[in-house]
Each structure stands twice: as C-alpha cells, then as structure tokens.
Length: 168
Image 1 (cartoon, rainbow, N blue to C red):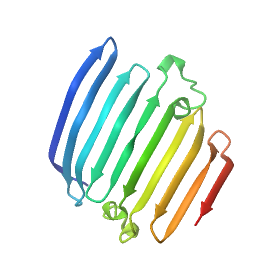
Image 2 (cartoon, rainbow, N blue to C red):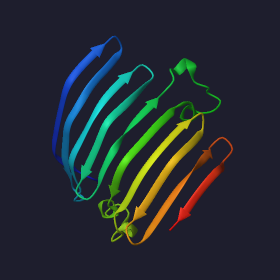
Image 3 (tube, rainbow, N blue to C red):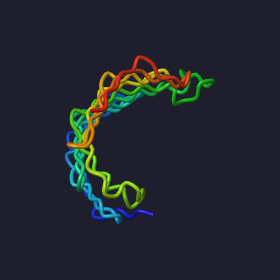
Image 4 (cartoon, one colour):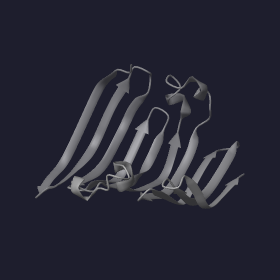
C-alpha cells in the first residue's frame, strides 16, 4: 500500500452556472510513502453535464514535469450505446506540450524500471468512438533513443493503420 501524507490543496475562482462548475486548482502538493513527492499540480477545470476539460495543466513531481491540457466528453447514460461498452462512448482530447517522466518514481511499484533514464514526451492525441487518432507523438531520452510517430489505433477492430514511426 502507498500512504499519502503532507497533503495540501488550494482551489480558487470557483464559479457555478446552472449545471456547470468552473474552478482553478492553484496548487496541490503531497508526499508518498514510496518516496515520490507531488511538488506542484495546477490546472483550470470546467465540469459540465457531459464532460470535463482541464486547461493549463502542470504536474511536477520529484523527478517528472508535465504540461498540457485535456478534455473528456462522457455522454449521458441515456445516450450511451450499451452494446459497445461505456469506454467506447467517451471522447478524449489530450495535448502534452512538454513532459519529462522519471521511471525511478514508479520503481518501488515496478522494480524493473529502476535506473532507466528520464523519458521526454509530447503528444496531440484524440480518442472518439473507439478510435485513437495520434496527430503526433514524440518520445525521447537524450543520447539513447528518439521515437516520432502518428497514426490511428482502432479498438473496434483491434487494428493500427495510417501509422508512421521513426526510431533514431
């Protein structure tokens, strides 16, 4: 189990308009029993009846730093196609402008990742109706590898199409 302690939350600019909620998370910090500390989490959030959007997202931990934005649309229960499963009814728009992930932070849970170098990433990806459309995705670790790619992943057909990737 992982224990969370020294938790701090600062939410400001709370607005309610009908069934829509807006607020800014100015800061969230916390420490975990596995040694990873959430040094900063900030974002502007909008929540409505069918989804949520997060703008100005910034997550900084002991060794990782990610900036971007995300929108999630979840249809109302009566609008969902129960034959496909609820996950295929949602849509997601994810943009990570710049990110650095330190595998050592998850090594207490996944020991084989200990000692791996930090991985940099950026992406512009959407998911709707069971299809992930990757406009671009860049993953790299300086002086070790670079992977650039784009394409579509169709979960309805378990297929990958229109892809291009390059390992440098």
